[in-house]
Image (cartoon, rainbow, N blue to C red):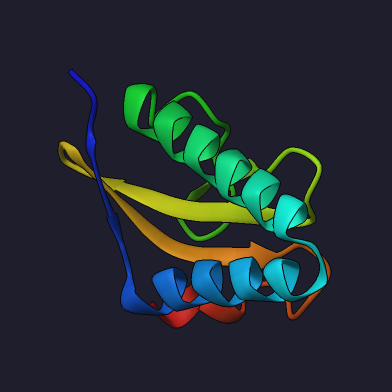
Length: 97
């Protein structure tokens, strides 16, 4: 049974901001970003322990074709997405979430 995936409000804002940024430049790029994000969330929900451990008791999944990663932690039968982070900006800024 897939795990429930819950986004931290700041992570949801990050995903939306990235989508808007791509959409302003290219609607097709924003659609591809959204599809990559959805694929990653599906992978996480189906096998949350599969990606290797990352930092501070978290795990991460890299988005295909985009410089973003989903950083999350597993809490029981729930996955808590704590960041949709750009891979080249402020590493670890999400630690306090």
